[in-house]
Length: 257
Image (tube, rainbow, N blue to C red; front, side):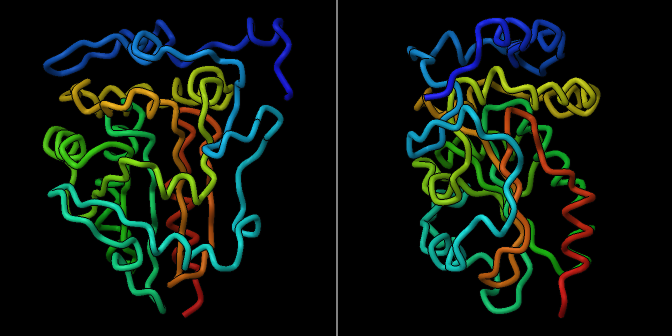
């Protein structure tokens, strides 16, 4: 197993940055350190994927070519839940022949950075739909947690889904682990988006955090499909390392008819 030298760990600022504690939350002012307080974990492996594979040496974002040709079929058979607690297959969310879909996987519904991403998706929704692209947001947690985000942000519940068992995240190989969540250098880009993060958490509630506290170590990603074909893949390297929505939109517009 590859580990980071101790001197490097000292130079990396965790995402529980004290400066983020100056964010003004709505009805609650939770410390952003709560995941550490809740988790009883031994961070022996800094970077791990959902299958337990050590990702300490993994650098760089995913490309569609790293996935198998049948990824659309495999992902399509995953059952997720609407915010109203109705089960649905992923493959039923868009036309599996020619439909273009952006599938955004949030870390979890209680992640402030994911509220920021969800706000960006909500603001971009009309733009994507006018281009014939369907936006789908999936988060880790139960449907009642999804409803909290949808009601407080707000966010349209007709394109918000819950994956409580992280099945889609496992299939897509999205990163998971203590180091990815709190110590990855990619997370520092959150500082450049402080104002948008501040706007997103005005009505934030910590109650949206999954009851399964180990779920807060999950990272997200963003994927573009045409039917079952994967055209674009972005795996978040760390908390807040979101795919640029303008770039995602441009890719959708360049999809051949």
